[in-house]
Length: 157
Ligand code: FES
Image (tube, rainbow, N blue to C red; front, side):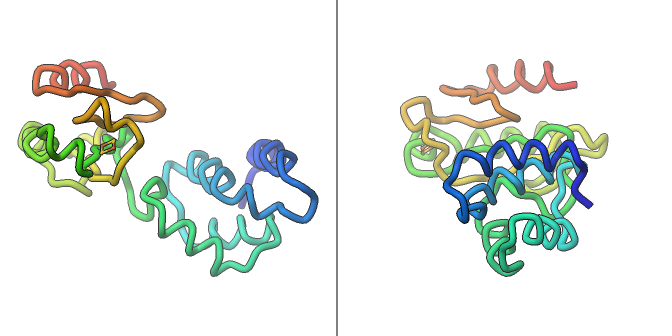
């Protein structure tokens, strides 16, 4: 269920914590496993992570369903994680999210017809000074405007 390559990656994270604290690597383990399974976590994968880290499955399930960076249904190749928390909201995130939904013809939580992009509203991503902002992959995009969003979307392939 978890590839040997993924296990090696998880082991690197596990090694950063004291012996007996393998569970501290659960978020990284879920991220690695999700990435190698088309960006989706199902219950079999959650059980596999629990088994690998010697954790109760319910504990892994709690982490996997609490944080918004884990997907439990299909997402686009690119996930636009748009912050709608206070700083971003005061600087216009709601209007930009609506702009994005109209432009892509999707609602938040949906995937574009071509499977390229999905949009999610998320809580604070810790870049409040650059709000409104979003995250796509590992990249943060700050001080967003409709023009900037247009350019960002054009570059997604
Ligand atoms: S409120 Fe948007 S990044 Fe903090």
